[in-house]
Every structure is written in C-alpha cells, then in structure tokens.
Image (cartoon, rainbow, N blue to C red; front, side):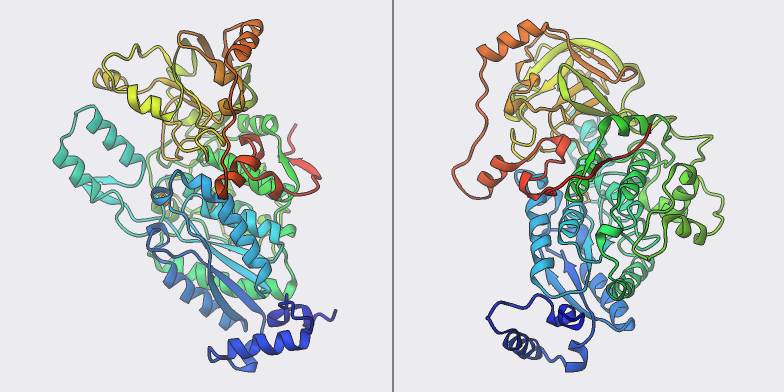
Length: 576
Ligand code: FES
C-alpha cells in the first residue's frame, strides 16, 4: 500500500468491496459539508469533543476546539472534531469508574474507525483522561492529550474555597452542626467558581500532571486554568503539534514507554497525587503490555518526597501551581530522579524540555527536595493477610498518630449498611476503632465507587473526632483526606479475606512496616470462608453483564480483561 493510500481521508475505507468507490463516496458525503479537494488532501487531525451539558468540567470545550482547529490549520492540516462519551463525577450513576472502560472503548474504536492521522483528545474530569489515554494506547495513533484545565477558586465570607476538598470540609462542619443550613447553602454557590476541573490536587489535577509527565501533552499542558488565555494557547499548540506528529508518524507507543511510566509515577508521588492515579496508570500501562510492580512503586515512594504544596496534602490550588511555573518547576526539581531520555509529543525528550523551560524563579508552591512538604512519596503500598494482593494508603493525607495503630473492627457489610447505621447513636464505636467497609470493590458495588472515604460516625464527629482508621476495597476521591486504607485486593465480593472480617476482630495498621493485618488465625479465616460462602455478583444482560464478567481487580487497573494488551513485555517502574 502506498503511503498516500493509508493516510488522510483515504485511511480506513469503509468496506464496499471497491476501494475507489469507497473513497468516491466518502468524499461525496464530506463535500456536502462544503469542503474542497485541497482541504481534503491534507493530514487529518481528529479532535475528540467531550463537551456535554452534563459535564461542566469540560465547559470550555467549544473554545478549546476552536483553538485546536486554528493550530491544525496554521500547520497545514485538516481538523475534524467528533464526539465521544463524556463522564462527569457527579452525573454518573452508580459511579464514574463504572463508565471509564466504556469511554476507553468508545475512544479506541472511534480513533480506529474514522480516518485520521493524529488526534487531539480533550479531557479533564477524573475518568476522562485515563479513558482517553487507555483508548489511544490501544488504537496506536499519534495522539496528544489536551487537558480542559482547572476551575477558578471562589470565596466564602473572605475565605478562599475550591472544589472539592473544601466541599468535604464544609460538609463535615455541617454534619458536626458547626455551621447552619444557610451557611452550607451559601458555600454551595462558591465552591465551583467557573467551568473547569476541581481546583485541588484531586484525581483530575493528578491525571493532568501525569499526562504531562508521560510526555502526552505539549510542555506546560497540565496546569493552565480552564478559562485562561494560557489554556487556549496550549490548545492551539496541541493542534499544530498534532500535524507535525502526523507527518513524523510519532505514534503513541514511542511515547508511552517504561521510562514514561517511571516518570509519571515519580510525579504522582511528588505531587501527593490522588490514589486513583495508581489504578489509572496501571490500566494505561496494561494497554501497553506493562504490569505495574507495586513493590517497586513503594520503593520509589521511599525516595520521592512530596514537593507540591496543594490541597488536600498542602495549602494551595491548581492556579497557584500554574503561577509558580507549573510542571516545569516540578520537573526541574525532580530532574535527578527522572528518566530524561523519554520522548514527548514534541519529538524532544523530557530532559530537553526541562532544559528549554529555563532556570525557574522564586515561588512557594513547589518545594525543594531538601525542604519537602513530606519526606516520602504521598502513597504507600501495604500488604498482609487482609490484602494479599495489596492495598494502599495516602500517607501524606493521613493523621500521623494513626499510622501505627491496632484497633477493633467495626464492620459495615456494604454501602447501604453503612448509610443506615453510620450516624446512629446506637453504633458501638470509639475513636480507637477501625471502620471496615466491604463490597465496594470493582465487582462489589459495582465500579469501585469513591466510597472509601467513610464519614466519621456522627456521634464521634460531634465529639470533635477528626480522623479514624478506615479500610475498604473501594477508592476515595483524590480530594479527600484521612487515615484511609483503600483498594484492598482481592475485594470482598469475590471472597477476599476482607469478606470474612467480623465485628470485634483486631486489625493492625503499620505504615512503617507497610502492613495491614487481620489478627485472626489462618485456620479461623479458612473456617469462616467455609461458613460464609461468597456469592459473586452477576447480571443478566447489557453493559453490567460485560462489566461484571470481565472487570479485573485494582492491581490490574480495574480494566476489562479483554482490553489489556495481548502480550506483556515487562513491568514498571524499574527500581532497585
Ligand atoms: Fe470533574 Fe472534579 S468533578 S474534576
């Protein structure tokens, strides 16, 4: 096949048994939209439009598309925008994670089905960037991630606020009856001051930083807020760069290498990023034939300090990180810990991009390695008989006094059971206990909802208790904080040891020893498994059936088994 026949509008012709006719027909239809032959002869850059009235985090998508188109045309390409699924955290039932793999399939198949030489993917809200990177990794085209950007911060009675750490903080105050109905209504108007993604280092900001660390955005693509001129310039540059990538055939497999994942994990740890970042990186790596080695990730964490002072681990918001120089400032500081030869979408290496970003300037958002926010990486990997396949804790958001703690289990069988009893005055619970929530894992809920942030029982909250050890097989929002053990693998719904924890059992958490242990003998646990057989959830039809039959556990990224790479070639990160 000649190069010309496999590019532009000639690419991936519809099967009519006569390729000449297929192209003739395709051109006839597109000409109905007013295109000339000259336009149709150019490299085609697809633009994934995830604008949706249900997704205010992508509320700037129309402006971004205009800017990307401008960049594509200035570079001599033909821009073609098209829609895919869009997922917003608050408008996805039962949980956005349930739909991430569906969005990745939509993205992959539309990238394959439609003729394009490169693609710019507009994503921002938590699950959209991972879904797009997963889909693009499988489709194999030259691809650039364009982040929508963070929302602006608001002000409540002169206090700066932003979604969604402050959402949880104010809701906690309301639950503890520290503020009244009028004040909680007032604050509701201020938490989200513009379109764009959550303004703290939640999952959306984490994935934006990871996308840049992977080399999948243009330099500086992670941090400009959604409504700024900087964000529009990033969009124009992304469009122009996509044309260049199409000419150079700079496909995504040349960028998403083991070194790129190594860099992304360093950044995840150094930003005190969302625990969800591990699951998403595992899923993206799985599309590239790479397993994530959780033990190596934990070793990496021990010599990666948290440097970015953003909520919920620190003080600032995403727009402050941007004003402090954004990812260039962080990457410069992390330089000795990075794989500098990793290629980026510019065709230059990460090391070259760091050099090009200049010397930096005085600022107080990104700390130095000598004076970090937190001496170790934000996330620690735990093991033990309660989580043979691993569990994690965001130690940078945990209470120091609770990181070495043994306590009595107070068990909730599922999310409904918890909702029913957590605020009851009759709940037998003290601040020294450990709350255990079962059946919120990948198959359990299903979709592994962000219900791992178990609220402080009302009677303890009213008594002033701010934190308590909590354990589940679910996830938690990147904007949450507390001494919370997550992603317990295998999950309760498929018969993991978590399923057999009883009220009153003793549990030991030791972050120093990376241990989560149920202090019950192996014999007793085996007997409980016989006495309490687990019925694995099933569904009769539809997407739910596909989901329940094929979804993997957290250590495989909660991807569908048939979407992961057919052949695995290694693991990441590689660290002694
Ligand atoms: Fe979209 Fe937080 S809800 S980024």
